[in-house]
Length: 386
Image (cartoon, rainbow, N blue to C red; front, side, top):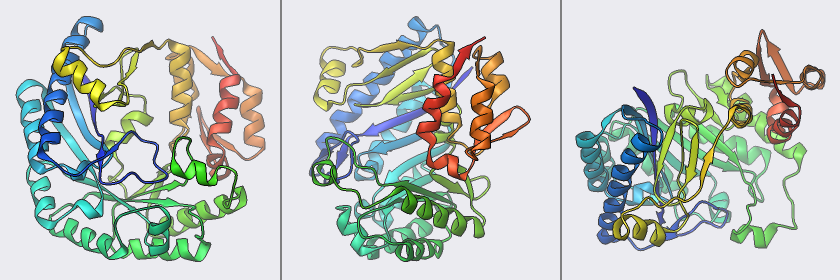
């Protein structure tokens, strides 16, 4: 039986944040959105099951994780997820150990959280983004610091022992003292998991039009901020198991590890990506097109199919694996993907203090993690078949 991670994209939010380039649509909450979207999701699942059986000859599989991302998944009701879980229970092998819901403080109530917990959701990823009111204002968030505190207290009362506080750092006006103060404030709630993402100015966002020619966050400042985050959290017992993620032992995000460890995953909803066996596909970032294809044309929405060979898998293994603390295995590159990285490049990066090596594994140093994408490109350029 093949084990697969299941991702659900919720393309709805109350307001589009100025830095966000994920596919989402600002809406006023309406149950009609839920009902129509749920019908499309169920139809996609039915058609995907047929597709996996006929196209890849995969008939026996189980979903081992569930992750709802967005958008704002907590905008939808617990009834939506309960209905979906019942459908999955009745039609698939659905027994995930981890069911994660991304949540924003302004969409939560204690009753709603209790109901999420009651239907089986056992992990929350709370979009705190900043514990500074100035930071929240700059990032265009709808919630306040008081809302964050209230939400975290509700999370505890609703018996969520597994949750993450997710931050964006590097916003304009944030200094080292402010960052440290935000981290210490968050630590008062003893969360088992943190995510810290550096603010990046993406194309096709309001921030790109405002700040594409400006830079207030230099490389030296970025390095100092990462050092503050890692030093502070490690002193409290958190392990930086992935470039942007820190956790107590046993609280690493099981679903995201599926991506980083190159295991199969299935994505539902507009803009969602899937990779099962040697195939990868992506749904169009268009809700109307997605729903029309499924409910009116009775066909899967994606058109692009990519067939991955050993060389492409090796590149993805390098990219994803080097995000992890444990890095990648040179033996796996050689034996599983029939490739190797030129020895002189590995030696050079080790000499420059960007890579470390233990037995057959290479992994990024603290400085190397700051240059992850550049190092990966260099390794790709020096990847050869064996």
